[in-house]
Amino acid sequence: MRAEPALSPCQWDDFLSSPPANGLAATVLIVEDDEDLACLLEYRLRRERLNTIVARDGGAACRELSRNPTIELVLLDLLLPDKDGWAVCQFIRRHPDPRLASLPVVILSALASEDNRVRGLECGADVYITKPYSAREVVLASLRLLARRRSHLNACAEIETLRNHGHREEELRRLLFHELRSKCVVIGGLCRRLLRTGAGSRGLGEEKELEYLEVINQGIHQLANLADGALILAEPQGRGGWRLTPAEFRIDQLVAEVVAVCGAKAELKGIRLLAPPLAPLTVSLHRLGVTVILSNLLENAIKYSPPGTEVTLFVSTAGPGLRLEILDQGPGIPLEEQGLVFKAYYRGQAARLGNTETGGGLGLYLVRRFAEDMGGQVTLTSPPAGGCRFTVDIPLPGPDHRPAS
Image (cartoon, rainbow, N blue to C red; front, side, top):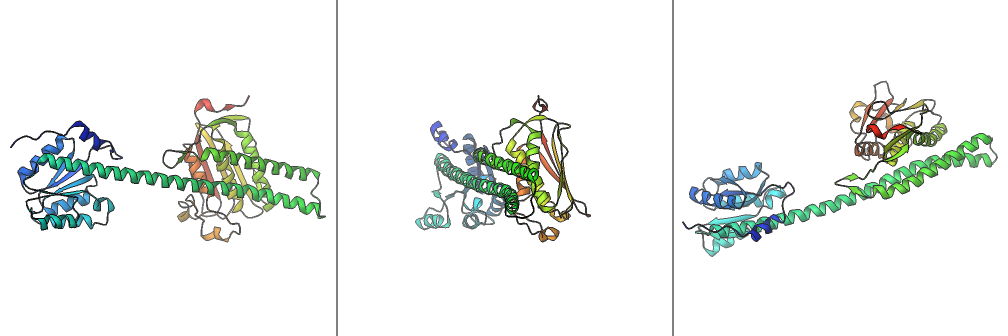
């Protein structure tokens, strides 16, 4: 048999211009019971750097298609043992898996009549080539179909990326609304208390009024920081991530600001917020991310704690990172729910359903997202007797945390 010339570089480059996401060469399934023809096709396809798999009958072809997701093209004879090519083609086109159902199919058959050619195309074949055929013609048809398939898959991937970006933007909006609402609740509560005092009710005293005004001022400052942070979070990093660029700030000052705002909310509910003072300390982290983590954990603890109880915050930089620990004396979280509370929009059942405060189910989800995006992790322990301990560990490179001068 005369040797067929290889494809030109430009023809091969047309195929490689749209590689798959995993960067691997395409795999072609050759369904052919004639050993000589199968070997010829294998040889020619492998010369073009394509992977090949051979099935000698229709049943083996269907089994290979079902278990091998790397197959991107099928070269299909019609006169096969076990199952004929018509049945294999129908198996492909009627398969519930869209990836398999959309595989390009090239029929290679000695059935050369017009009726058979039409039947093959109606059955779902992309190309119908009659025997005897030129191996070069088969390879060219295969490369064109593979390039078209990869172009389609890449277009679908781009559409999915755009869709995911839209989902991230929606998530960002919900995140900001959640944070804004939480801060406004505190500021609004203090303003109402000040207004009631001004309307003739028992006075709070000048010192307490000044304290409330300072908390309101800090709350407004945090709202402004959230607005600035929106510009940072609006730029996703890779697939599904946010760009959390670290910068130096005083962790002791940030903790004091958050504790002041959350402490006012705790006071309005009759809860004591305990937070041992920190020595001046500079760290290099994403400031907004740490603020979101700390404020959400504290607000969550206050929300689910009954009046007359305590919420305690411990902050330390012992070891390689920053550790935040929040303990409350609330009803706790049942064991079966502890793996669910960090999911977006999840609100606990059982004891926590009795709480009258509503929320969007984003607080703990945001804590986990920001902690993980900064390379950290969140753990929860809640004994049967009640109460919760949330621990957040965020890594800090050695040179990046030091006493403030």
